[in-house]
Length: 110
Image (cartoon, rainbow, N blue to C red; front, side):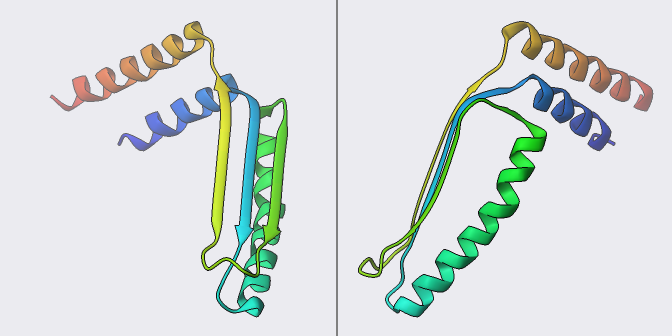
């Protein structure tokens, strides 16, 4: 019952967010160099799918996505940083709209 409220709220939120800076970094590593190389390839393929999705669904001013491989490290490393902005008025409007829809849903149950 809450799913329509959640999806509509997330859709409004998605349109209101401004991602000023997005940094994603992945360093593939494994005890076996072949596995590290395969991990690097998988991360590159994943980035090839995630980046267009992010670009088509969010307003992103600056994006830096990097993949690397370290044949001497034992564990892979992931770094993510985002500078996200939303106007206070937009956040309040979204919250009020979702709250009203939720109250209507609970009012019809009783």
